[in-house]
Length: 242
Picture 1 (tube, rainbow, N blue to C red):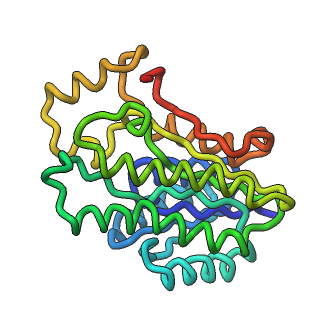
Picture 2: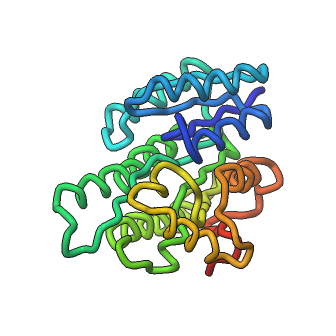
């Protein structure tokens, strides 16, 4: 029986790399997106172009009804769900004194309520031996200025990860988090000049930025049979940045 993976926010960037990698490993993939149907189609085309199965489902993870529909449509298309990757998120970069209440609330709606909604569905829907991988960020450990609200939201994701690994006892479901380092995505480049990007690239001992594929490699490991004894962990994929 082919295994099925839902990857939230997988129309581009790290999410797309994860979707492509899991499809390469034989998963039928559900590409989730909010509004960018064109980018979602590119992800589908890449996956299907290699002869693998995938569908795209529009859903806003911050909305309970959207998430329920996401799982409904995935089950209808493929018969069940084995893997959930919580990748959807936003990254506001502002000092707290300038952080608008509305942006604070939106960050937590997407970055925390979103995983809450999907994890709640997964608790009832994932098949025996399933895998859950939540995306955090190394910025939580670094405590960089300007990232206070974002880091708070990702710290919540790490707390959910550890707790749910215990709550899912008895179903052979693992729950882990991956915390990428500095990775060149649209969110990363937003608001940074060339000098800042060069500085960030040199921070890790390996002296480069990560790639979406670096993150996808680790997610694929955790989602596959070789990662079955790893549970309740947050793993930092960052080239030694800490």
